[in-house]
Image (cartoon, rainbow, N blue to C red; front, side):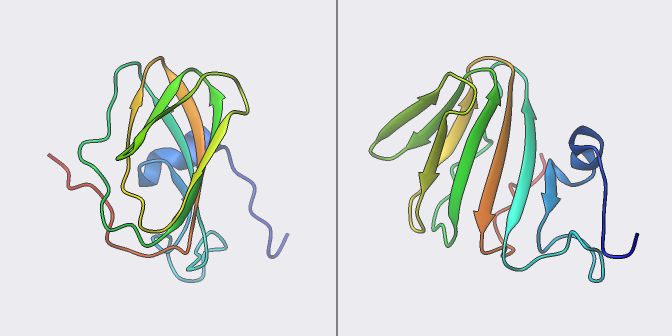
Length: 121
């Protein structure tokens, strides 16, 4: 079917650090977008973001699918503990995160702009 893409989040997410849709997908791919990014994040217990995201120029929504996930902000932390719990943060809000239990989260960010990938160690 033209203009339709069917995938599996766990499989597709493995190719781009969990990101299913955004500026980083190839031009011409239906999953390429400069307007929005979507991530299927699977995080083992104890995993942390390697460094804080600072100078944020996007708005973001993170929804807990399963597990227990802590979002860290300069003014305090938010713990997502029940399926469907979510948090939204605005442009300019620095953040980090930690998986308190094995967790699956879906993140939506807009717009989709380069410059936030944590360097590989």
